[in-house]
Image 1 (cartoon, helix red, strand yellow):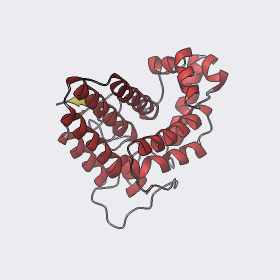
Image 2: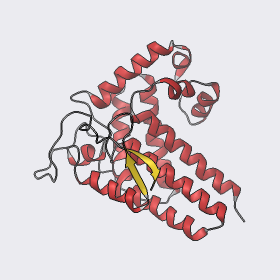
Image 3: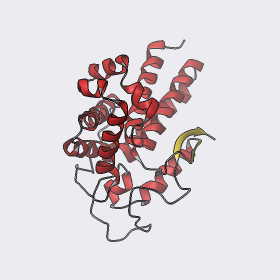
Image 4: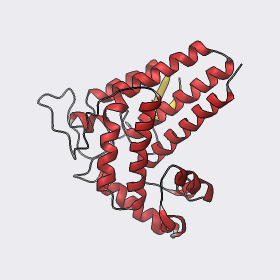
Length: 246
């Protein structure tokens, strides 16, 4: 018999993964920003210790969009920033081995990366978080079918991805973003990202060393397996968005 509390918990966790993926994927625009400003969303965030203040809730939408876009660019896109990309954080440049490794990980689980609205990378924070959200949804569905073997396999996959990828860099990145952010929104969301990562690692009973350390920029490795690409955007046609099962 399905444990409804367990499936609800899995989907609640998936929801937080998706929210954080949306926050760090690109500049906040339109429906997503409006959804975050609703009374219910702000209450849920407040329950997690996130206080965005009255300005976020009541500021003119166009002005808020512009302020957040400038902050996002300064933190994650502009020259001298620190993009939320595993290869950059741990290997000193875009499209290093972490990119191909995450792509292979997704494919092994039956997920395909497809072009999104904006170009990104397989090892982008938003893609990694979105992938784990999909796995948690898959785990919940397996439990609803009574397929505990499939649910346990997905659970092991989630843990393996944390150990091999997200757990190695997300906490250090979150600390850096929290220190560097000037707008309260990104400062609070970076704090939430770090706290959420710690909570997930505790829940999953994983002990993963933080290889990121919150450094502004990872040193360039003496030998790289891919050409170094400057800027935050991928080359035309190479953006990806995880979440579409093959």
